[in-house]
Length: 512
Image 1 (cartoon, helix red, strand yellow):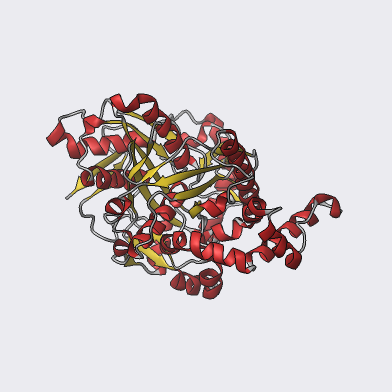
Image 2 (spheres, helix red, strand yellow):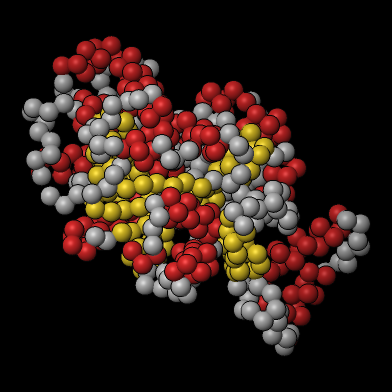
């Protein structure tokens, strides 16, 4: 059997963070609701010199150097992100450019030119999609070719100021080394997939009428004490068609299209989409497992019972344990042990029992809460999920990287606790808004400890610098033009545009 999987993982997160307790005071929110209710302790915040590309490149350097990889042995670098820097040029090409700068002296100019690179975009599941694709590519090469691929995930999970998603922000990147005979986790080719075309979270191209834009500027001018002439907006609009200057980029039409980093979203609806998509993907995974003889429902224990740990996408630390009761129920329904629980909590609600879909959704949500309070589910969470939450609590949302940060979190904690994970199965439930879920599993390899002991995840998190509210807002708005912390041993964004380059040209460099 072809064995492919994750040989090593490296993670990068900004050195700046904003503590949730300070954020709560700043926004007038109750800290305990965010901390005890959602599991939030801090959010990672990119410095002025950081972006999706620098974070991804810094993660790659950590992976390449730790494993003493030659660029010649790396066949592809695929990036999963929903924070792309350009609508056409892949962010992964910026990462390649930076890596070539750093390694050219040792390996020659163009040392990464043979690499296949591309960006994969599907909200928070893009990193898993990139991994899935790269696993197939490595497996197809066979042991003879011994292909190596790197999967990068990098995102800045940024929400509008004062929005309901602001406290779930975070940022970071990572890199997976995908290989034959992996030292860390083998990933069998059994996948459950569910795709639901919904509008729960998205980043649309937005259109603003020029009249509205000009009016906003004039209103600001009036607030600043400047006199506003009646009918001035209309007069300015009338001038636009007659303008012959080519540099009036805003005036090419009567509206301006913008693409914001921050999303449009419906949090409650997105939670339902997450739950429904993961549940459907789990049903598909179980069917695939039965088809390929991985699972026999007549003889084997429940699949989630077989998984030593369950790693899921965590937009906030406690999301996993809140979203999984449906899967927990589905995997145990019609078993003797679950019949005892049903006698206490009652049967799962059925659609025909309710007069509207809205009432049915509320009933399902209430039933999930009831399940989550049972002793059986609490024990399940404590054993299989709790350790995955610890890093997320300190970093916040990483979008495509959240599921891999959760994996590193539990493995480093398990290493400390000397958990016997050799040969055990790890379950993965990935989700991306829009929406898609993938359920798959990994098998821990003998000697996994030697890989995990180099993660150094939690010690590095303790070394970060806590920023204040003023600095946080300046970084969020982009008014902080200089680095809060002096860059050291990392890639930085040096300039955007400038003399003798095309508009928007991004220039990066390595700082020793």
